[in-house]
Amino acid sequence: MVLLLPALLVACKPHPVDTQTHDTDTQAGDSGDSAGHVAAWDYLVYMDGDNSLESYVTHDLNELETVGSTSDLNVLVLADRIDGQATDDGDWTGAHEYRMVHDDDDQTVSSPVLVDLGEVNMADPQTLANFLDWAATNYPSEHTALILWDHGGGWDLVSDPVVTDPGESVDSGGAVPPPDIAEDDTSNGATMSIANGELASGLTPFVDAHGRLDLIGFDACNMASWEVGYALAPFSKTMVAAETTVGGEGLRYTPILQAIVDNPTIAAADLADTSSRTEVEGGEWSSSASDLDQYAGLASAIDALSVALMAAPDGGQFAWDDRDTMMGADSEWYYYFMDLGSLASVVGAADPDVLTAANGVVAAQHAALIGNYASGQYVDLSGLSIFFDPRYPKYDIAYASGAGATWAQATHWDEYLMTIDTAATTTMY
Image (cartoon, rainbow, N blue to C red; front, side, top):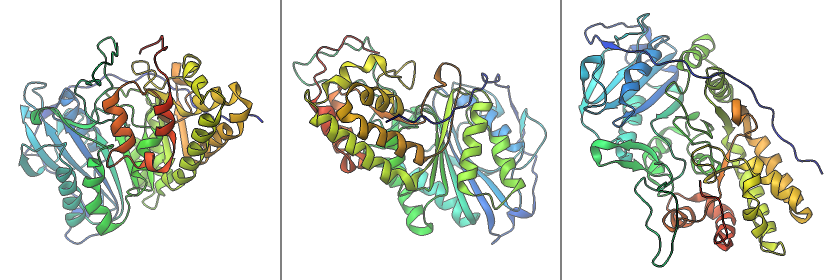
């Protein structure tokens, strides 16, 4: 049998970030902001700049204004800033809610502040739930896309240093896995955990009231893991995310929003594919678009691979020992985020008894991906990562038994990870 690999796209490096100024008195409008009007799309950006990313907030607000809202499209933003990282746009802090309006000035945020919330904790699921409710109540739409804008770290638990079990020695060279989504430095560096169910908690009220989102996208690093997609499947039809680190430009909002303006009936899958394709064309290393309805099949395939590995003569230890021949999904967290397609290819080639299950994973991943794009040193990424580094007990526990770790309930991958002997590992990040 031959292992299949999805086609990939080569692209260039990102553009530099502009410097912004502020003008809160300028207001533009259109027919889309009339009371009771139902737009085709709400495009929501949960913009957590309450951390070291503050200087990018007004850059992306200006980018969202290059298209802005129309009668068919509401571009709605909750943006939070912190003191001390940037002084542009009037050096405001706290959180503002906007409906972005078009202007041709990429140096001035002219959209009016609709709500000044003061300081909020962007890591609190209730803050996300409130934003989604505000958007749905004031700007109803037929379809909704939600972008989570921040640092990213996949399904991770927290960003504080890992404390190992007594007697264990883990030499990480001072490195620990990266933070989760929605890092709020004003709130003591709190993050919104996927493994612990906090992101699910923030999404549940909207989904219970309005049904699944059409798209969840991450303008954040390292979020294209199969675990994240599986956890989000009950809340969204599609997902857009990068396996790799994302630069300051991140998602390219101008072509994404223009695609909606040009075709208000655009399908969620097409919007997701446009988002991923234009992100890499614009210079980022990777981005993939997923059909989350296909993730049940992907979970079944990963479960079959897990069982096959544990049934191997050495209990699947060979897969861990062969990690150096697999492709990590990020140069900094090389083994923590292992590319799923590469892992399946390596273990399938190494053990004929595992080959069928490995091919099943590659085929299921291919079916789940709407589009997969990558460039440069990451051109061979398959589109999704998987956790393959069980050396940190605090993270392992969250991965296997966290309230939001639905991937562990669906597969035996976590059980397989716990059987691996990591003592002989020679490579650490």
